[in-house]
Length: 268
Image (cartoon, rainbow, N blue to C red; front, side):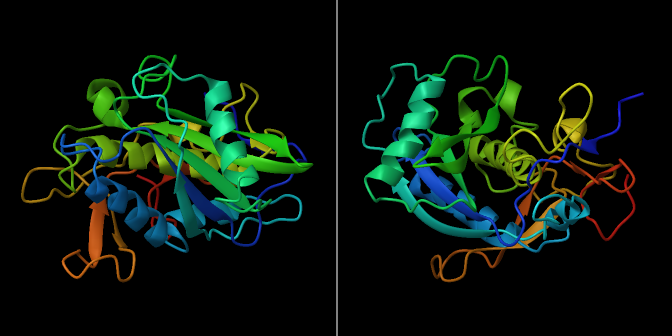
């Protein structure tokens, strides 16, 4: 039996955490995935997830100053000018992208922020697609513990980092990426400094539900499965939908150690 998740006394991200985006690589390609429309998918998802029944699963986690509210907002974004094209990037490159964005003033220094470095599918990184699809950690910047995450476009390896090749928003790479973004965001708010919520093996809340999506899922007209529907970013474009469907990995409740898609329903 999987060990229960427990709190270890470290801080959680209470209040309203803020998501910041750092676009890394070439997000203006003609491959149908690394595109401005793909970027808008990310904005729409992060704009809609705050206070959703899904993200409120995180409100079961307490800590300092805690508890987690189950809310998040999307604010500023930037492009990393040092993106190296097809040159493999390292963990240090990801950290540098975050610190450079802050030190240059392109993004604010915010202790309540989660900075997402989102790499386009032409970017190679050791471990991506073979060992993981994303991760989160933190680093001190001017004495402030800055939480950040790497997530790569799953279009680079759909068989490894996407649950399906036909996706709800007709972009299997970014749709797959969003499931990982949700996974890392959940862990960043409940274990931001890697000393709060995890089990005896080190697995965090989203790890314990990784790559599970629930049962009897609805499908779009194209055959793509989904398990949640969220409002899109207000005023994105006049032709954008008002809601989008997503297939997102479930999250663990700290109350009953069960995996949920929707905190208002029973676990499946």
